[in-house]
Structure formats: C-alpha cells, structure tokens
Image (cartoon, rainbow, N blue to C red; front, side, top):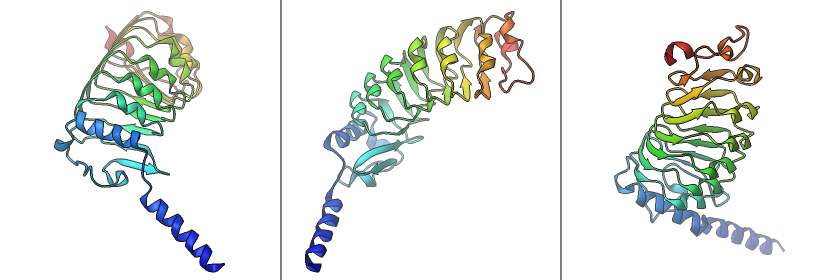
Length: 243
C-alpha cells in the first residue's frame, strides 16, 4: 500500500514538473515578443525555456496571470492575440515605445484588475471592448496619443479605483459616467481636450480623494468649481489652467 501511495505521489509531482501554460497563451506571448522587437528588449526571453522563467511573466496553476514588461524597450504594436491571455490579472507595459491602437481583444481579459500602459505612443480611441473589464481596479493610460470621447459604458467598470488618462487627446464633455463609479478614489483627466461644465455631483463621490482636471477647456464660470473646502476631493488648478 505504501509503495502505491509513493508511486502516485511521484507521478503527481512528475506531471506538475512537465505541465506548462496552454499553447494559446504561450503563442500570445511569442506574438507579443515578435511584434515588439523582443530580441532588442532590455531583458529578453529565451523562447526555448519554460514560460514561467521568462522575464516579467507570472504563472500560477499553468496560467499566465501577470505580465510586467515596463521600461523594457518594447517597440511596435500590441497584437490582437494579446486577448488570448484570458487569465491575466495585471498587465503593465508602461514607459516603452508601443504604438498603434489598443487591440479590441483587450476585452477578452475578463479577470484583469490592473492595466497600466503609461508613457507609450498609443493612439486612436479606447476600444469599446475595454468597458467589458468589470473587474478592473486601475486603468492608467497617461502620456499617450489617445483620442475620442469616453463612452457612457465607462460606468460598467464599477470596481474602478484609479482612472488616470492624463496627457492624451481625449475630447468631449466631462464624462458623466464617472459619477457612477462609486469605488473611484483617484481621477486624473488633466491635459486633454475636454470642455463644458464640471458636474457639481463630482464633489459628492464619497471615496474620491484625488481629482485633477487641469489643462482642459472646461467652463471657468461654472458653479461646479465652487467646492466645499471641507470636501475630501480637490480640483487642482482647474480655473487657472483652463484660461
């Protein structure tokens, strides 16, 4: 009986030793490697090695759950196959040279909680599919060339705590969908092309502790800028920077 249990234990350990991430996930990572000039990354990958050993890749239970290649000289566009990394919880690619649009397949990453693409050269509108990421807690896309308006479906991101779109080319009126993000703590829409009135309801958001909307084209005579000095939220240089 003891030998049987030993055999089962050894077999189990052997199985786990050779188990690896699904082919679709590995291929998605290789696509990213090829699309962003992986051979020239600051820290590159040995594609013949196990995926779990690749720099910036976190694997749990044979699924890729984290990808952090920030400041790693990625140069190129994000492939559509990125959406095949369906177990991703965190995706951090900030301060690289990534260009082009955010792939529509980003909406397949239903487990994603953190998306940080700051300091790249991304352009185009935010993909509609982005608003399907209902587990998202941090959306940070600062210092890119993103355009268009924020869709009303932004209100679907009910778990969002940080929304930072600083230094882009987002236009339209203040996105009222923000007012429905009850868990939001930090909001930064500064240095875009937003216009119109700032809604006074912004000051009633109980969890919001940091607001920055400077360097837009908001109305400077709106009553919404007369905020209660005891409020937790503070508009940073709104009037001075909009004139």
